[in-house]
Image 1 (spheres, rainbow, N blue to C red):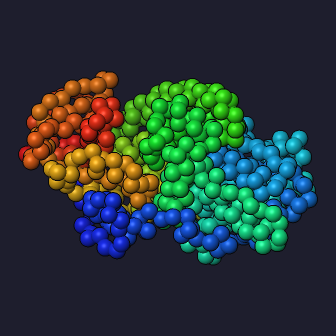
Image 2 (cartoon, helix red, strand yellow):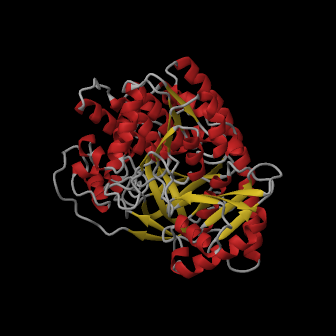
Image 3 (cartoon, rainbow, N blue to C red):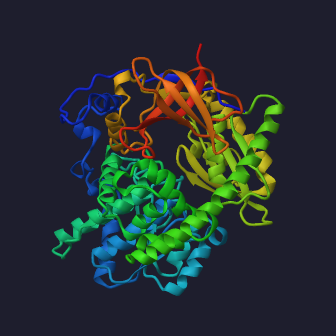
Length: 572
């Protein structure tokens, strides 16, 4: 089953505004098509960050933290088992210590034992730490029972989150979430790590205003903020680009924390040219793997240690867990592919797919849903038993533009009250729990809702191109400026071009990948291209229409470039 993609080109925009001479015209054009009218908006600096006190709930949040620090109370930062949650936890612990907190601990739920977020079971296990104040990061907005259980023990609770709230809020002492109804904070796209970083900025400002010594350099946390922001695939609006860009600059300068530097080394990336893609494809999966298959405590420990030797050891452990995750994911993906093929035999695919296998791992269903969503370009919800033999299912949903998947789950919950014990998430990704016996009813209700609200035209994938490159633009200088011109990501996409090429040679690499040698009209030398997973068992046509990224070829070095193929069609 192959998606037929239509390549559409972005309308050309003439760049205006002030630009440094070193920014080539190609990059200026690309920035302009992404809404950046000048260099300051294309590459925003930290000075342009929205003010911390413009984020709702800050007065109550900083008062809790100020008093806890002044009274030497025990603060426990409660993380989450993904990369955003792990980096947010590390930022919280490191930042509070920088601001004078002496008694700061951290905890994280175990996916198999506690489920998601601050659950009553996790609260029971935290009792041995004797906390005075719990600070949730990247979760909490849907954790009503866990917050109530913590309060029943006499603990204070500060919720910091970025997920969409439900109809009611948990009874926490303070909540900071840019997506609360009525919150006027301009950037709703902050990741969980970004929210925690903002809380620390506001706390430092309050301490300074009240005469406390608060000279902490919180910019030392931006490496972690960048990794969590990029890994969570939140839209890179100007505010997030400022945070991520500053963090990337720290990492490239070798100023990252010991754990991130060890992960970069273990992944074989060059720290000097690290990109958002390197974070998304190399660093984040290693951190995430701990929460998917093992215990995210290993990932958080890696991000908190200042011992370089220990960090390298933990990075090696995370690499081994990630290798295991890849194997589990490949098996589950193959099984999902087979399930899709069976559905396709019965006719056209429905507008939303619900997949389940009793042997799937609950920590990997999100990756399977994402892979299948890309494969068939429609929303996918993948389910697995919450634990082996359990009647409770854990589901992970991924969506396409045009369908807000968290709102879709809310619509099903409204139509069938009590069917979904728990759900939450964003427009493009969400999670839920479900009794096994309710799976068929849920799938039918979700399909009915999606058929009603989703325009069928949106089920046909489009690949958006930045147009053609001229023959003289295929050079190393442009490839480097594209690599370094980000961070690229959600809502500020990495440049993709398209054009016609003559194929003058091809070979297969690693049984799945297709290496091409291409002739470009007007360019004296051929150019290499790589199409990952592009080998179909048949030789490519002699003339092709490609959508591609222009990249440096570090393997050959010098002035070598290569095209990374995103899509290939035969050309007449």
